[in-house]
Length: 158
Image 1 (cartoon, rainbow, N blue to C red):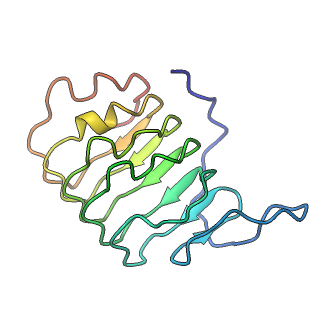
Image 2 (image 1 turned 180 degrees about the vertical axis):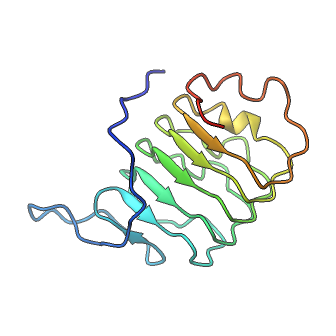
Image 3 (image 1 turned 60 degrees about the horizontal axis):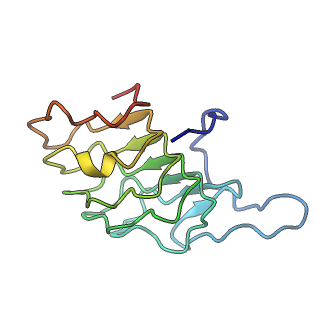
């Protein structure tokens, strides 16, 4: 799997709902989120208990941190081939189902810190060929298997 070149760091300064210039309508944005019109979606700190529905397939950065999500559904992010940054930190996630990250072929940054994970989600992470940075701090993980990150050849920050 070949990863696309990183175009730069994404700012998390969401809030604008303006669409792209030229009269094109902006991609859909869930009512519980704010969208920047350029593929960034901020749903942080909204008291959500589930991943919001109605997100654009062209979303490149999704922040659903600081919510009350306890479980990720299977295939939760399957239709987001352009997603490069995913913030799931500061929720109450206890486990990550095997296919939760399937289809995230361009994901580079994944925040899973400050949750209630008891083990490294080895199989779900193996579906992320371009992952460069992963945070798992402040969970309840007591053991990390030797092979936990074997398939993450692009990982440089843990």
